[in-house]
Amino acid sequence: MSSTAPDPRPDLDPTAVDRAPRETGADTAPAEGAAPLQRGVFVAFEGGDGAGKSTQVRLLADRLTDAGHAVLTTREPGGTPVGERLRDLVLEHGDAVVDARTEALIFAAARAAHVEQVIRPTLAAGRTVITDRFVDSSIAYQGAGRGLGTDDVAGINAWATGGLQPDVTVLLDVDPAAGRDRRAGRAPEDRMESEPDAFHTVIRQTFLHRAAADPDRYLVLDATAPVTAIAEHVADAVLRLVAGPLPVLPSADEGTVEVTVTGRDAELVDLPEPGDGLGDQPGTESGDAPAAGRDRESGPVAADR
Ligand code: TYD
Image (cartoon, rainbow, N blue to C red; front, side, top):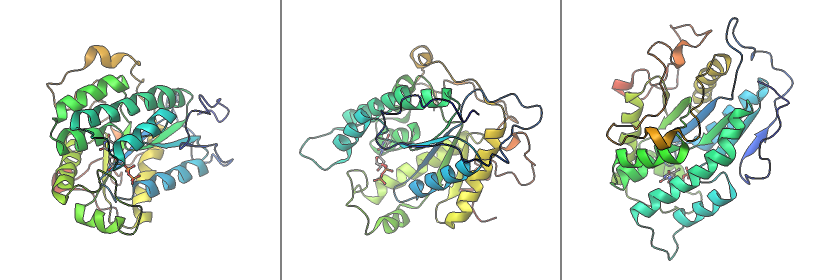
């Protein structure tokens, strides 16, 4: 990964934090025999409100930067000027009535801008992108929570993103009541946060279901575990990805020809073969790898070792 790659669109993102690598770079060399990194690693954090995603995004960015990687942190909805305006529109308790389909399309529109203007060019420049929420949030909140259907919402988002998927999605699993407690005293609740616990329970189940169905791509952690333990698991997993070869990104228009809404996830990208997953990156010892979604049948992995 080059530390001198030009910032693809430096002025487009008021919230994104672009970090140059620190000078160490000690443990970031590709594993012996690994192909040189062609693009940056794409990491998404997902979870219910109050799961502590923003803290973990920051800690991961610190860790990667310390290890010599160029990292961009960003968030959804948002990440571009148009995305931030759409964020206000869809999350504020204003006079405007935002029905469920409109809501889903606003999130998808903000995401399309985010992918096109920020995420793809940054990955193409060889930088790691860490986003606070991505497509899974729409599938969980709008598809399941609002009852629009997870397949349909996956379909419009596959089109909006051209089929781009994170290399790893870190799911911070939190019980809705615990999430509400953790949010107490912070900023006033937005439109989503003020929904009842039943709504948030459906969302939680949807996240867990998706993670269980695709264990190579998800790392599920108990959000109530100690912050440092969670951060350690996440950093281990992502540093392994950074050190290994990555599949080629789908082209930007891939979503226009391949979307199917009949399957559960409208997957557009060839997933790694079983055994090529996160836990099997070069340098991973199978015994202690924090494999994505491990123990998924019995719920999230506790972050305590
Ligand atoms: P988040 O940024 O996590 O909230 P905050 O910064 O206030 O902690 O997310 C904002 C809200 O938007 C959150 O309740 C989830 C919701 N959301 C959706 O409903 N669909 C989406 O596609 C996304 C990205 C977020």
